[in-house]
Image (tube, rainbow, N blue to C red):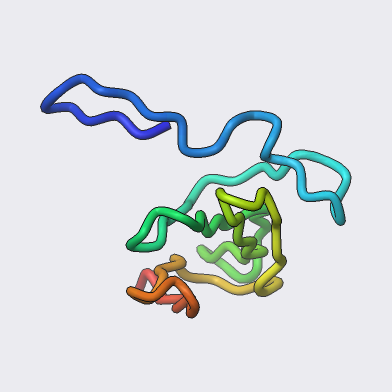
Length: 96
């Protein structure tokens, strides 16, 4: 859900039915996400788990909102996902 506080407009980015990658067979539980510049893809940090003291590792997934296809990008990384302008690359930036 995206909420524009200036206008009050709310948009559904990903419906509940889209939260289950077919390869996983269960809905993703995620907290952090980012959209590509064109809004076509959503990159999510899912399955957070302790990695070291004060750090959490995530699995990263990408949903193509047009085709509904999920792709697993990376397992067990820490950092926040950001997409390149083209949406073809994902950078994982440390939060330190």
